[in-house]
Length: 179
Image (tube, rainbow, N blue to C red):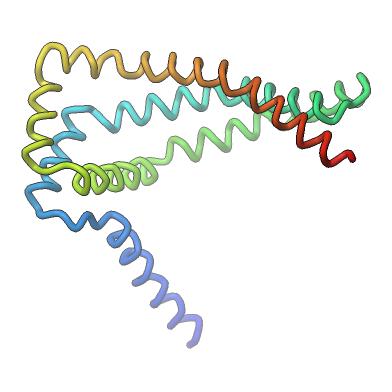
């Protein structure tokens, strides 16, 4: 009986929590404008493309992070080869698990609901209508078309700039721990 009650409470609490999480405090017209903006921006497809790019970059990022970890631990060449080989063995299953998580349609719906809430909290209905008008213009349409490419190039630039600094930070932390 206690399990049944607990299950009932949980069944009621989970939907309530998700409704609360997406609650904007905004009026219906503002929320509707945010939803229209998401549609005009083709946000679901953009999000899917971004997640797919992240998924494609995951193996390279994991290899880079492993190399940084190996370098910071100052492993012997044999230990380094073994660590890399072990990582390569687990890489396909890790990437598959990540792809499964990133392609979950319920997750995309939740992200969209949260994004609508964020926009509705931060922009008025009128402001969103102006942004919608921009994205329907030729320049706005070009912006939307170029956005995935811009995001990919920005992500690559971020990795180029951030990863060497992360490597130095990890080396410094490893040196401190070794003292």
